[in-house]
Image (cartoon, rainbow, N blue to C red; front, top):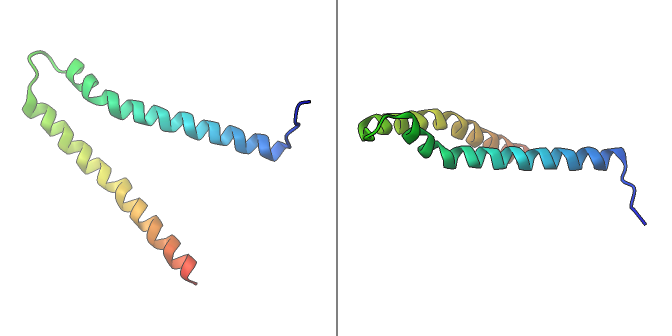
Length: 81
């Protein structure tokens, strides 16, 4: 006998499935980025240029890190009250 799910349960399941797929895609993109950088660059690999790209990733990643920290600080403040 099949269990019928409510509309809300189906929505939550689809949302969870979408989050899993997006997370997997993000992880795959991060893992593949060094390979893609090597493919895009001409051979032999110019490590100083790849290093500059790595520095750019570090700069860009500071913004989401700061936003995440702010989110944690706000949630701690709200739970304290």
